Length: 407
Ligand SMILES: [Fe+2]
Image 1 (cartoon, rainbow, N blue to C red):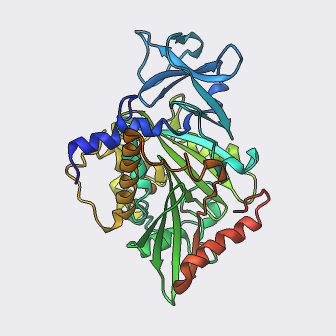
Image 2: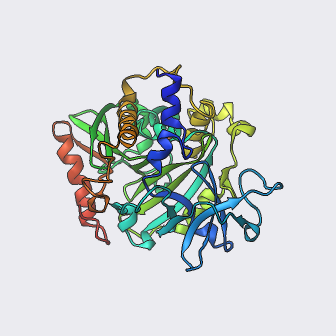
Image 3: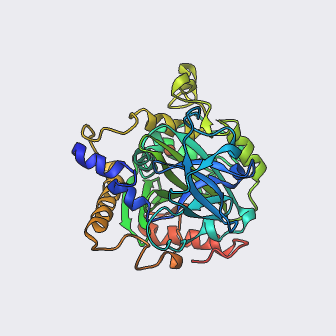
């Protein structure tokens, strides 16, 4: 458990807040390209600021400051063309990467983008989507770097046909086996967790020791400050940012990246639009309708009784903590190793900015543009050689990839 003062330091993201200053040093997802396709402007609420994605006199896309109007609904702006811009307010640069608009809201020159797979792959192999969670960004990120939670929160009591798993998390077979991922997660619920600091953040490895000297190895990367990169299936990875709208709401933005076939974007979008409403990408299952909790389903099919979409399970878990998790009451355990390491990194970054001494990940040495990967996969390996074997499995996948995914 930590003090209230420290909890405020690591969660609050306004322009004058310590964690807000750290996030502003990095490119932040601001909107999907499909949102701008609906009109000339899109209202964007980002890092506690009320902004609008629009074009400046030079026709470049920028995030300008929006002027509030009294009849405006809180979450979005229904008639984008009528958005008024504050000519005195800050204007932030914007760049499009594979269907996602990123904005830089910090001082000085924006950093280079890392050379991650989601940015390197061709447009055809990347699909971007987003969803609203009504809670602080940090608890949304922390569930993603807890590799044990999937064995409980996303537990399926029976395995589905893995051939129907396209576009869904944990519905594929584990690499080189006929075991569905759902079976591995269910039958081996207490992984050993190895955490290593990297040039971009953390490499978090969950080890599930199977029988016969074999180990299931799953790599989750924490990309500083608020993203993760995880395996979704043998074919795809997920790179997901947990972006603050304000202190008490966030969007997850995901870039699904395929190492094999072009992404079936129409199917991926259709799957996700069944679970979200437009224009604010709010989940249809939410606190107001008890996340469609069904005790009969809980008895027979899933751990949560909240359906098969794992995003809903995560949403329930993080929103259930309250708008900002009260970390003065928490009890961290063995499986929170990565969360503890991450908070240490965030606190070090805050201190570095405040003191003017020390580097933030990817902003000085090494530069972001030189960073590739990250390696992120599931593999079943010899228990004695898991580190090397897991790495080799991803390198082999990259060698067979139709675009240049070499690391
Ligand atoms: Fe999850």
